[in-house]
Image (cartoon, rainbow, N blue to C red; front, side, top):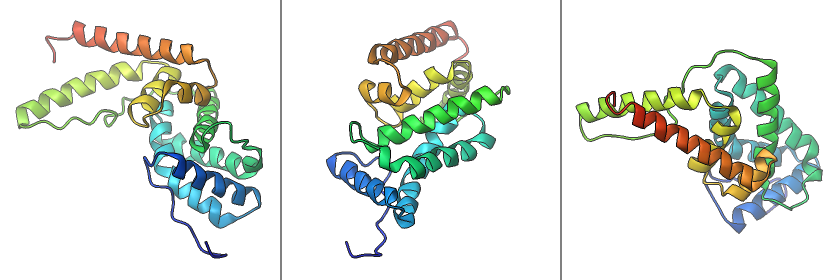
Length: 198
């Protein structure tokens, strides 16, 4: 890459060693004070972190502030990244900790987010039934703790393995498995109790 050339953001959902190497290179440049590298990393992570934080915080007013706080930590602490995890794991862990701190500051009632599960149906009646089911699921997920919502989001939408989720959340892998087990059990029970409604 020529000096001064701007790299493209790492595409959403891109996986593998190439993405990790590109992101690690960006972090090294950020540690050296390269603002273009930071902009590239920020643009690449903005959609992923926004979606993740929307699910954990469930308050649109707070998402941008928490995302910016997390990315400021990335800017200031880029030199501390030691390569023991993927860059994405490190960044998501920072965002998760910032989200939990924000939730402790603001204790407001939250409405269910109606875009967690995407399930198109073949016809209007089917769409209506799916929408009703989705709405009920969202209500139930909305009653879960931020820790349970984070596990669901990282598993279902970011394709993270339990070990990576454990690094992000700062807890043992068994705790992640337990949270997912209880979240699924709770959702299954909830759906079973409401078969008549959906």
